[in-house]
Length: 255
Image (cartoon, rainbow, N blue to C red; front, side):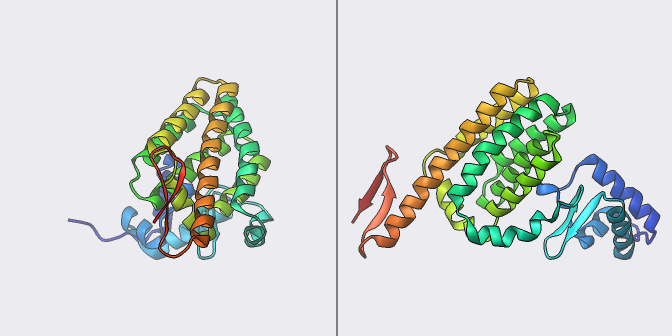
């Protein structure tokens, strides 16, 4: 039988500190809603709200209107300009930046990541591989890549990563990413590449970690190019024709 929720802010604060230190929060470092936290911790929502205010004042969490509460330091002002960046770029530009940024982050992570962070990378890689729907896979994939970026130990690099990661998560890119997942290689290859990246980081091999990340991103870039090509062909194909991919991964038009 469940006991009545405690309406004690100090108790809620202690429980939330334990939760943050355990790192058992969701993808992208997002905490559950106030209601969910209250139910999980068996405390009143008012106590949770007050405890969150304290944690925010200490710089342990930050909030974004309409997006939720996140663990860690609040990103710098670059995030205010994300909407303008989304409107002024395209998905290929994002991949160009990722190809130059993330291999370097993987190399730094191989030199600096603590064992606990590497274990979390393995956990996130497994969650990504186990995800059966596109939305879940995107969330866990983004969390894994951010954990690698965070483990690089460079706040400026992390800020740049967060801007790029926010753009690629925008709703404008959802349909093209979904189409890209259905073309070219399968999810098993992506999972194996994730494991190769984490293994190289665990082995403290910066060169191998950077190259594994580069190979992984090149695969995704190829899939995105293929998906955008399909979209363009689909938009201009005569009525009654259907664009598809044959077993040899070449583009085909079937009547």
